[in-house]
Image (cartoon, rainbow over all chains, first blue to last red; front, side, top):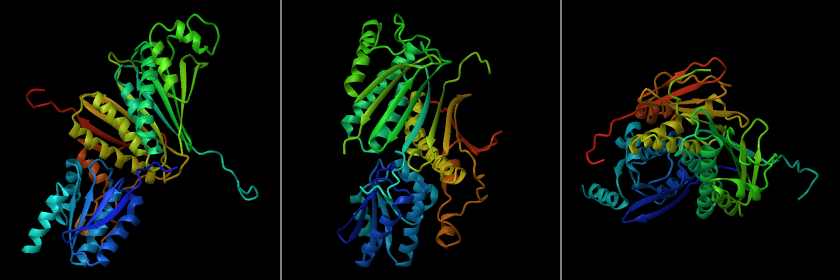
Length: 122
Length: 153
Length: 153
């Protein structure tokens, strides 16, 4: 009996941005699901990738390691990565581990879409 | 279910033990811990709320009556998670035994409801909210209430 | 037995050695901290730091062995909330002295993991391993009580 809020991962497209919705625990057990969603959107040619979190979910350092792994791929594939939906606390955590240098942190999905559009226009 | 290669292991149970100060307000720790565990086991919100109330009553009784709010004493809460149920036991260190007029080791619930000066409603509530409830007195001294909530599939 | 003029308010809990249970511990300790009046921001930091310390105990100290336990104790000491996370030390925790930066990780210079201790040290006012007489790693986290400076509350 696993004691977890198992991660559900969904992908969708919104105005040219590939959004990966993460609902649930982002821990070591989330690896396959997150990587597989990222591969799926990349295979469809995504240039802008948004990881959309749910505020009250649990993200631990093992989960962050998975996201760093995504950053490696994003860099290799010349994509742009951003995150949204994180609580203030987890935005702080992301900055502490240095993820903010590689993925823009937005408060909301809408802000992220606007942000990506600006990038695209530049 | 084939029996030949089915080794039928012992039911897996995971136990969390909490030792709380005998001060009012700290029942909240037991409530939140039980709720956290129950949610993750898959109990629905309404059952989790019932559980929190039952735990609150049991721990408050232990703090106020069993331990007489003596800061040196602890309330021991054991949470046992099994595949199909959650068992919570709350034990005090028994300055004041529940059945203080009764000589039997295991008080009958009717006696408890009659003789218990305060919290009689609390005990009734626990019985209403949980699937199984058992009150005992531990040999070393102290009251214990064992509550079970079944996980519906 | 130690005698003190004011009994220390403390909470102890033990957990099964399985990933996921750190979340139940987190909620228990958060409830304790709330009862002590700690700010919500500090409690968020505490929750994350505690989870990381528990994961280290579960995965490294106790080598993911399911029969072992993790023990957590919380007490107030000199205006600080002091938490100790102890495992049964099958494997002494020997963390790398200098964790890799994200740039080093991205350059493939080492494991992507290992950020737990760094997060803990940044989120807590004090943190570190403490020695114990019996076997086991014991990790201490401390949070300084901060005066509420906001007006109106």
